[in-house]
Amino acid sequence: MKTFNSIREILEFAMTGEQGAIDLYTRLAGETTISEMKEIFMQFAREEMGHKARLMKIRDEGVMETAGIKVTDMKISDYTADVQPTPDMDYRDALVLAMSREKAAFKLYSRLAEQVTETGLKSLFLSLAQEEARHKLRFEIEYDEFVLRDN
Image 1 (spheres, rainbow, N blue to C red):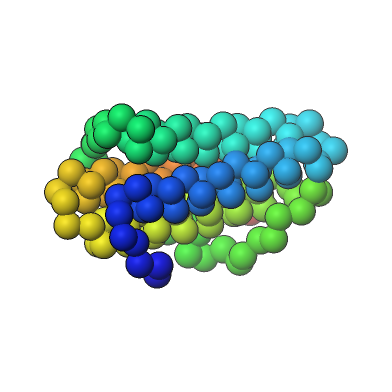
Image 2: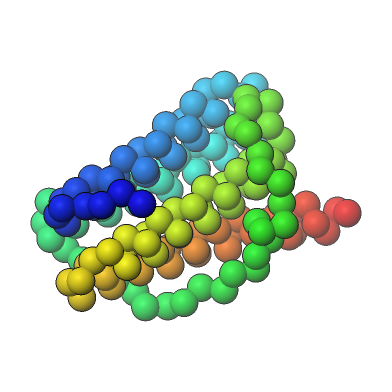
């Protein structure tokens, strides 16, 4: 993992990751011809925009609100094959993609928490990791209800 020299660098790195997710979901929304998938991708993009906005607020105002709730991991994404984003992907694949991205974001924020020594920042990154875990759980529940139940 990259080595950081300042808190600002860590936040900029995290914001770049969130922007990558925004760009991906927005691109997929623009490419798909299925109206339901377009809305789903735009919803995913809006959630990532919220993450980025939270990081920007922390960078600009030093506001570090945290929540210490541990989120359950259904581990569904541990048993799904990687999915490459395509304009014609179906809902199942979109959920798998979203679970995978949220899992990666969770790992990133957990690693960032390990790299900082300041207690407030450590708590912040652990809180962001749990937020990503909540999103992943939401996608896992959706996958369980709409994909696994049909099989």
